Figure 1 (cartoon, rainbow, N blue to C red):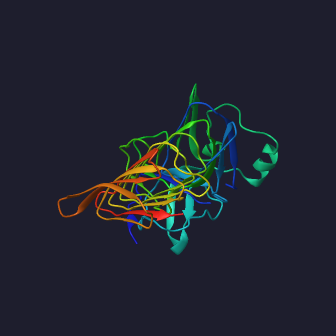
Figure 2: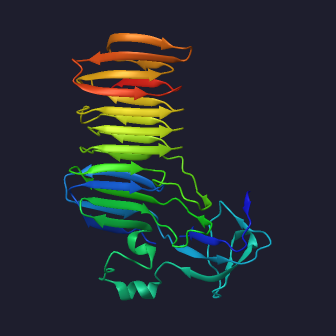
Figure 3: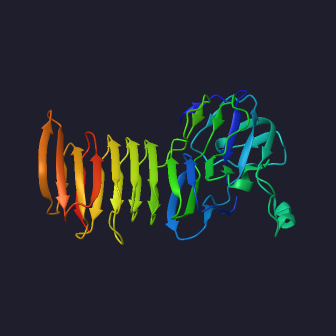
Length: 319
């Protein structure tokens, strides 16, 4: 197990808050999501962005770490034992000394006092108030980011959280799973193999991801999705493509399930292009020894789909 030297660094660990929900009035403009947290997003005909945390019994502990002979072992479930505010005992009987740490969760007594109340304003000293997310609302724009320490110089540990979102179909979604911009901190992530999911959305969407897969279900478009080292899976079950679909997957495959009634014109580029649909082949070319480029048409080709799988395959399946 890899060890991190735990001397004079900053610790931010999710160790266990009850599932919470936050509702934000927002039905016009751009929803910008900049988070590496695992998210399952669904469109609906409403006027609120509803965020539900799936982090059961999650707490955040942070503070300046003191000296530790063994350092901090990653990949374990951490818990606080004892009454001392400057000693935390971990599994395997490792002891980490902390200075001025705080547990960012409410005790049972605090929760009783808070019953029926909610935090006022948009700024909070406790990230649990915003479900461990930085949420900022401007005219025509709602921005959701991962919670970040105010001390940008520290090494910060993030554990990927999990959320479900309901978003109005009347907004535009810009979703970047890489937290939108790079930071200068040393950051360690608990990586999840689950794909990011968007379903039943009728608005415009742009998704960008690295080292992650994307699943789209009944998203009518327009769609621009780009992933590096991830796969893109698109399923049309209760709808068909209505607007431009542009999908780019470097070092991954693209897998699309289409109803036979779909009217699409497909520009496809990949290592192999496979289908059980009776497309009309407009053109076919080979680039080098490993890239195939095809123009395909189905039922008149009203909606354009641009698919680029790089060195990966493209699968076009019949619904």
